[in-house]
Length: 220
Image (cartoon, rainbow, N blue to C red; front, side, top):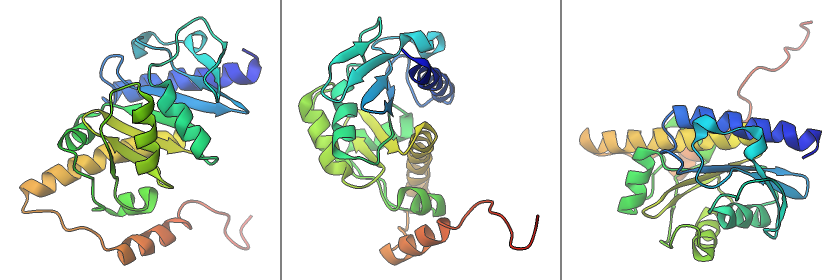
């Protein structure tokens, strides 16, 4: 790998360890990738995230050809590549097995828009893709079809797939899907969730575009 790829490989390893520590992965179940020019760096198959290093990452083409690396790529390579081919705006893809979100995926229940941050970041609810075996071309196709232009999808009886412009964005998405799934499950126990309306989601989404620190006029 060249210097740029090595930098991205280090980021992948770092994000993998952090998300594993947060409980979004289970052992070696879960994977990450990042787009680097016309190629993709992806985590290796079957390796514990505590031991993951930049040198373990695998460089692959968008067609799935291995370009560099000493490990076998993730068994969900087809899922990642299908998203990159379908979505030019996707700079990173993260697939997790977090508990609450996977519970909804196992029930094949979409996660509705219930909170401010869910509306602002995800732009609405999270759909469920039709079931297909892990690692299959069918799973990849079903996930992309359900994902559409959105940032996340639940994989039936499997887990979560989230995407973003970069690794930070994709990590925020999968973290928020897990948080939203927990809120949904708690709301069911508290008397039943009340979804935000499409108009309310649009309003919150519009407000979020101006959120954050920006230079103040006339202040140096």
